[in-house]
Amino acid sequence: MKINRDYHVHSILPRTNHAKSSIEEIVLEAIDKGLKEIAISNHGLSHVRYGFRKEYIPQLKAEIKALNKKYPQIKILFGVEANILSLTGETDIEKEILENCDVILCGYHLFVRYKRFTDFFNFVILNWLAKTLGFRKEKQRKINTQAIVEAMNKNKMYLLTHPGRRLIYDIEEIAKAASKNNVLLEINNNCNSLSVEEIKLCEKYDVKYMINSDSHIKDTVGSFEFGLKRAIDAGLNLEKIVNLEQ
Ligand SMILES: [Zn+2]
Ligand SMILES: [Zn+2]
Image (tube, rainbow, N blue to C red; front, side, top):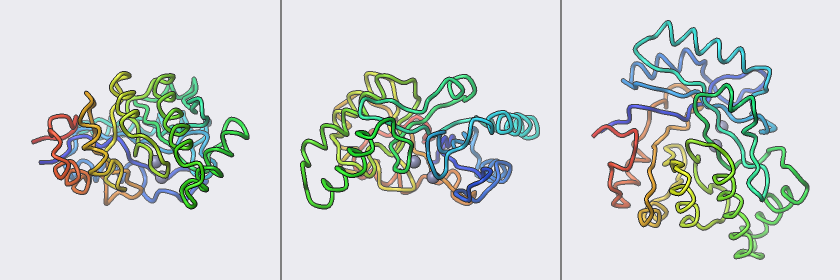
Protein backbone atom coordinates (compact mmCIF):
# COMPACT_ATOMS: atom_id res chain seq x y z
CA MET A 1 0.00 0.00 0.00
CA LYS A 2 1.12 3.54 -0.70
CA ILE A 3 -0.25 7.00 -1.32
CA ASN A 4 -0.22 8.29 -4.88
CA ARG A 5 -0.82 11.98 -4.06
CA ASP A 6 0.61 14.18 -1.32
CA TYR A 7 -1.19 17.51 -1.04
CA HIS A 8 0.48 18.92 2.05
CA VAL A 9 4.11 19.85 1.41
CA HIS A 10 5.83 23.07 2.49
CA SER A 11 8.72 24.51 0.46
CA ILE A 12 11.39 27.15 0.95
CA LEU A 13 9.90 30.63 0.71
CA PRO A 14 11.55 34.03 0.68
CA ARG A 15 12.04 35.55 4.15
CA THR A 16 11.35 32.45 6.25
CA ASN A 17 13.45 29.44 7.10
CA HIS A 18 10.40 27.37 7.97
CA ALA A 19 10.78 24.64 5.33
CA LYS A 20 14.10 23.32 4.12
CA SER A 21 13.70 22.17 0.51
CA SER A 22 13.10 23.88 -2.82
CA ILE A 23 10.11 22.97 -4.97
CA GLU A 24 12.36 21.20 -7.47
CA GLU A 25 13.98 19.10 -4.72
CA ILE A 26 10.50 18.15 -3.51
CA VAL A 27 9.38 17.24 -7.01
CA LEU A 28 12.43 15.02 -7.60
CA GLU A 29 11.80 13.24 -4.32
CA ALA A 30 8.12 12.78 -5.17
CA ILE A 31 9.01 11.29 -8.56
CA ASP A 32 11.49 9.00 -6.83
CA LYS A 33 8.74 7.81 -4.48
CA GLY A 34 6.39 7.16 -7.38
CA LEU A 35 3.83 9.87 -6.58
CA LYS A 36 1.52 10.92 -9.40
CA GLU A 37 0.60 14.27 -7.96
CA ILE A 38 1.95 16.70 -5.42
CA ALA A 39 0.67 20.01 -4.07
CA ILE A 40 3.03 22.66 -2.77
CA SER A 41 0.86 23.98 0.06
CA ASN A 42 2.64 26.64 2.04
CA HIS A 43 1.15 28.44 5.03
CA GLY A 44 -1.44 31.01 3.99
CA LEU A 45 -1.30 34.78 3.85
CA SER A 46 -2.24 35.53 7.47
CA HIS A 47 0.31 33.33 9.15
CA VAL A 48 2.54 35.89 10.82
CA ARG A 49 5.70 33.83 10.90
CA TYR A 50 5.56 31.46 7.94
CA GLY A 51 2.88 32.68 5.57
CA PHE A 52 3.64 33.50 1.96
CA ARG A 53 2.81 36.95 0.68
CA LYS A 54 0.51 37.88 -2.14
CA GLU A 55 3.42 39.25 -4.13
CA TYR A 56 5.03 35.78 -4.23
CA ILE A 57 2.07 34.29 -6.06
CA PRO A 58 3.23 35.03 -9.64
CA GLN A 59 6.72 33.73 -8.88
CA LEU A 60 5.42 30.52 -7.25
CA LYS A 61 2.99 29.94 -10.08
CA ALA A 62 5.65 30.44 -12.72
CA GLU A 63 8.06 28.10 -10.95
CA ILE A 64 5.42 25.38 -10.67
CA LYS A 65 4.41 25.82 -14.29
CA ALA A 66 8.02 25.46 -15.45
CA LEU A 67 8.53 22.35 -13.31
CA ASN A 68 5.35 20.80 -14.69
CA LYS A 69 6.88 21.17 -18.15
CA LYS A 70 10.26 19.84 -17.07
CA TYR A 71 8.83 16.80 -15.27
CA PRO A 72 5.76 15.60 -17.18
CA GLN A 73 5.72 12.33 -15.21
CA ILE A 74 4.19 14.13 -12.21
CA LYS A 75 1.48 16.74 -11.78
CA ILE A 76 2.48 19.62 -9.51
CA LEU A 77 -0.26 21.74 -8.01
CA PHE A 78 -0.07 25.17 -6.47
CA GLY A 79 -1.74 24.70 -3.09
CA VAL A 80 -2.10 26.64 0.12
CA GLU A 81 -2.67 25.77 3.76
CA ALA A 82 -5.00 28.62 4.65
CA ASN A 83 -5.82 29.75 8.20
CA ILE A 84 -8.96 30.05 10.31
CA LEU A 85 -9.02 33.62 11.62
CA SER A 86 -12.19 34.14 13.57
CA LEU A 87 -14.78 32.51 15.79
CA THR A 88 -17.32 32.94 13.01
CA GLY A 89 -15.23 30.98 10.53
CA GLU A 90 -13.51 33.70 8.54
CA THR A 91 -10.30 32.58 6.84
CA ASP A 92 -7.53 34.00 4.67
CA ILE A 93 -8.92 32.26 1.59
CA GLU A 94 -8.97 35.56 -0.25
CA LYS A 95 -9.70 36.40 -3.85
CA GLU A 96 -6.06 35.98 -4.92
CA ILE A 97 -5.97 32.51 -3.37
CA LEU A 98 -9.23 31.43 -4.98
CA GLU A 99 -8.10 32.73 -8.36
CA ASN A 100 -4.60 31.28 -8.35
CA CYS A 101 -4.41 28.14 -6.24
CA ASP A 102 -5.20 24.74 -7.71
CA VAL A 103 -6.09 23.29 -4.35
CA ILE A 104 -7.03 24.89 -1.03
CA LEU A 105 -6.35 23.27 2.30
CA CYS A 106 -7.30 25.03 5.51
CA GLY A 107 -6.50 24.55 9.17
CA TYR A 108 -6.19 26.14 12.56
CA HIS A 109 -2.79 27.59 13.49
CA LEU A 110 -1.44 29.85 16.19
CA PHE A 111 0.42 33.06 15.26
CA VAL A 112 -2.04 34.24 12.65
CA ARG A 113 -3.53 37.67 12.15
CA TYR A 114 -6.86 37.10 13.88
CA LYS A 115 -9.71 39.25 12.67
CA ARG A 116 -10.59 40.85 16.00
CA PHE A 117 -9.23 41.09 19.50
CA THR A 118 -11.98 38.74 20.74
CA ASP A 119 -10.79 36.11 18.26
CA PHE A 120 -7.24 36.36 19.56
CA PHE A 121 -8.47 36.36 23.16
CA ASN A 122 -10.61 33.26 22.64
CA PHE A 123 -8.29 31.22 20.43
CA VAL A 124 -5.10 31.99 22.33
CA ILE A 125 -5.78 33.08 25.90
CA LEU A 126 -9.00 31.27 26.79
CA ASN A 127 -7.90 28.12 25.00
CA TRP A 128 -4.66 28.13 26.89
CA LEU A 129 -6.56 28.49 30.17
CA ALA A 130 -8.99 25.76 29.14
CA LYS A 131 -6.21 23.38 28.19
CA THR A 132 -3.89 23.97 31.10
CA LEU A 133 -6.35 24.70 33.93
CA GLY A 134 -9.58 23.29 32.59
CA PHE A 135 -11.11 26.76 32.80
CA ARG A 136 -14.42 27.02 30.87
CA LYS A 137 -13.43 23.87 29.04
CA GLU A 138 -16.83 22.85 27.72
CA LYS A 139 -17.63 26.37 26.61
CA GLN A 140 -14.32 26.56 24.74
CA ARG A 141 -15.01 23.23 23.12
CA LYS A 142 -18.26 24.61 21.70
CA ILE A 143 -16.70 27.87 20.55
CA ASN A 144 -13.74 26.17 18.83
CA THR A 145 -15.94 23.59 17.17
CA GLN A 146 -18.28 26.27 15.89
CA ALA A 147 -15.36 28.23 14.40
CA ILE A 148 -14.10 25.21 12.46
CA VAL A 149 -17.59 24.18 11.36
CA GLU A 150 -18.35 27.70 10.14
CA ALA A 151 -15.02 27.88 8.32
CA MET A 152 -16.13 24.83 6.32
CA ASN A 153 -19.65 26.18 5.81
CA LYS A 154 -18.46 29.58 4.58
CA ASN A 155 -15.33 28.84 2.56
CA LYS A 156 -14.46 26.76 -0.43
CA MET A 157 -11.83 24.27 0.66
CA TYR A 158 -10.75 20.81 -0.42
CA LEU A 159 -9.45 19.56 2.89
CA LEU A 160 -9.21 20.42 6.58
CA THR A 161 -5.62 19.96 7.78
CA HIS A 162 -4.86 18.24 11.10
CA PRO A 163 -8.46 18.83 12.27
CA GLY A 164 -8.55 20.47 15.66
CA ARG A 165 -4.86 20.11 16.46
CA ARG A 166 -3.94 22.37 19.41
CA LEU A 167 -7.60 22.96 20.24
CA ILE A 168 -10.28 21.23 22.26
CA TYR A 169 -13.20 20.49 20.02
CA ASP A 170 -15.98 18.08 19.17
CA ILE A 171 -14.70 15.89 16.36
CA GLU A 172 -18.16 14.52 15.57
CA GLU A 173 -19.51 17.98 14.75
CA ILE A 174 -16.48 18.60 12.56
CA ALA A 175 -16.99 15.29 10.75
CA LYS A 176 -20.66 16.15 10.19
CA ALA A 177 -19.79 19.53 8.69
CA ALA A 178 -17.03 18.01 6.55
CA SER A 179 -19.47 15.49 5.18
CA LYS A 180 -22.11 18.14 4.45
CA ASN A 181 -19.61 20.41 2.67
CA ASN A 182 -17.66 17.69 0.92
CA VAL A 183 -14.45 18.59 2.70
CA LEU A 184 -11.86 15.87 3.21
CA LEU A 185 -10.44 15.31 6.68
CA GLU A 186 -6.69 14.98 6.81
CA ILE A 187 -4.91 12.12 8.49
CA ASN A 188 -1.66 13.96 9.04
CA ASN A 189 1.49 11.86 8.96
CA ASN A 190 3.51 14.47 10.81
CA CYS A 191 1.33 14.71 13.93
CA ASN A 192 -1.29 12.63 15.70
CA SER A 193 -4.32 14.27 14.13
CA LEU A 194 -6.64 12.65 13.41
CA SER A 195 -5.90 10.22 16.24
CA VAL A 196 -7.12 6.62 16.35
CA GLU A 197 -9.96 7.59 18.70
CA GLU A 198 -11.00 10.48 16.47
CA ILE A 199 -11.05 8.34 13.33
CA LYS A 200 -13.31 5.89 15.18
CA LEU A 201 -15.73 8.71 16.06
CA CYS A 202 -15.71 10.09 12.49
CA GLU A 203 -16.58 6.68 11.06
CA LYS A 204 -20.27 7.24 11.89
CA TYR A 205 -20.41 9.98 9.28
CA ASP A 206 -20.07 9.83 5.54
CA VAL A 207 -16.68 11.48 5.40
CA LYS A 208 -13.59 10.88 3.27
CA TYR A 209 -9.96 11.19 4.27
CA MET A 210 -6.57 11.95 2.78
CA ILE A 211 -3.22 11.02 4.30
CA ASN A 212 -0.67 13.80 3.79
CA SER A 213 2.94 14.05 4.86
CA ASP A 214 2.90 17.70 6.02
CA SER A 215 6.56 17.72 4.98
CA HIS A 216 8.87 20.59 5.71
CA ILE A 217 11.87 18.84 4.14
CA LYS A 218 12.07 16.74 0.98
CA ASP A 219 12.96 13.46 2.71
CA THR A 220 9.49 13.06 4.22
CA VAL A 221 7.56 13.84 1.02
CA GLY A 222 5.10 11.03 0.39
CA SER A 223 5.48 9.56 3.90
CA PHE A 224 2.26 7.99 5.07
CA GLU A 225 3.07 5.06 7.38
CA PHE A 226 2.19 6.71 10.69
CA GLY A 227 -1.12 7.97 9.32
CA LEU A 228 -1.99 4.65 7.72
CA LYS A 229 -1.24 2.79 10.94
CA ARG A 230 -3.73 4.96 12.82
CA ALA A 231 -6.35 4.38 10.15
CA ILE A 232 -5.83 0.62 10.38
CA ASP A 233 -5.81 0.67 14.19
CA ALA A 234 -9.11 2.56 14.10
CA GLY A 235 -10.60 -0.08 11.82
CA LEU A 236 -11.30 2.47 9.09
CA ASN A 237 -12.56 1.22 5.76
CA LEU A 238 -9.41 2.11 3.80
CA GLU A 239 -11.39 2.82 0.65
CA LYS A 240 -12.40 6.06 2.32
CA ILE A 241 -8.83 7.33 2.02
CA VAL A 242 -8.86 9.04 -1.37
CA ASN A 243 -5.13 8.87 -2.11
CA LEU A 244 -4.36 5.36 -0.91
CA GLU A 245 -3.45 2.74 -3.49
CA GLN A 246 -4.17 -0.72 -2.15
ZN1 LIG B 1 4.52 24.41 8.75
ZN1 LIG C 1 -0.64 23.05 9.57
